[in-house]
Length: 90
Length: 475
Image: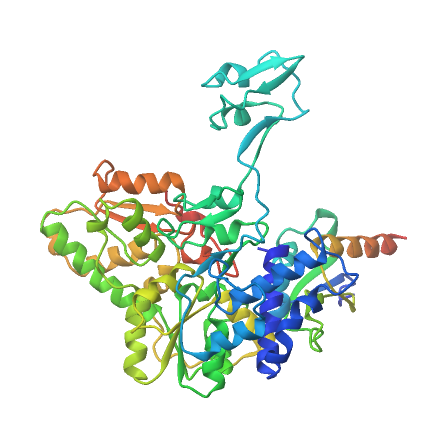
């Protein structure tokens, strides 16, 4: 959660993540699904430093409410965020 | 673009560079295919053995070798590596068609799917120019021996029932240089090829590979040689961070100096504007831009009548190389850009530029060395290039710069002359035909700017972002 109680999605834009797909994840920032507006914050971050130790094949990484997610895709992020939103409602 | 082909290419590059930098490449290189597809792992092609074989060909291309010239299949990657680093030699052609990786896509063919409702309107039947469509049992059928693949039926069907099988490399090639051989495997006809790289970007099986010089460049840096980078104007959009931060990141790799190719673009502008003015005063009909190598090759090989009208002004890369050479007379010069055709241009001017690296390769070097562009300090650029010169990277940028330059030379305007500028934004079979028409004088205009890639250099085959300025669309 960020200070406003919104779900925080941080997209790693370090060079490795950027090359292996973070670039297309940034599209989420521009075209956020309507139900997310006001509830989800998406930010591009400098390197989150999870890729060191030869784990680059699992890039791109995102951090959703503090949890690191590897092999991130728009679908995977959507699923995780929607799960969190549902839990939030209950 | 984010897909499996791009991902594999970049992962392999990162792996190769890391192992080169660690000094273990001689030991590692033949193991890479096995590390990526270990026993029991999932394959993308038919089996892991084929995957491994294609990975080996990919690595060979990264070492500058070509599929076409392979004579000994048992030659190890270690041997290819030794060959690549033995002497200062660039690949003769920038791309290679890896027949083993080609899926042999079936010929382009239109057919009717089950979406067909056998409707009453039957626009497919009534509009087929060769009468190749009949309707049997409430279902349209295409007679393949009559069909001329015009695609009219596909666009007219209200149910989207007609589809076609594609041959992406052939479809992408603007000049018909990619053709399938008797076995149905894609081959490149280098007498027709303009090195635009469209087949390379469009093959979903990654069978068209780029022959890299990356390890040679890293090897020269590793040996402590003086190497200077000149960076194409399209660099602005490539990485998160500023141009200054990008230059610092490039210097961090080990380059002694980093210069903007846009400084060369300023000279190209000056010279080309002057040439345009002289030729117009001399009564010539048309002048075209010359900075896009793939276009100049297209004119040479496919629109020879247009060739005399191509400006003789050297490209920004060549001018920038002169500037770099003046400042560092003993250095090797590396051009960094989004372009495959530049590799070919350098082959024509080996005394000017020593090596070519792409933005994609640069990105993988950053990744392998853990260099984060955004975390760098600003590079002290002594004199930033003019905005008009930096905009050479975008379609219409060259024309913009030249028109601005002409404002400073009112001789032409005084004679009542008006520039009539035209653009070709991206080479396709259709725009290549237009080049021929321009050559024959059948199309209007006195200045023609041609960019092989849609959107200009930023849309290049080795660009990391496909940044595109939609306000400035040409033809």
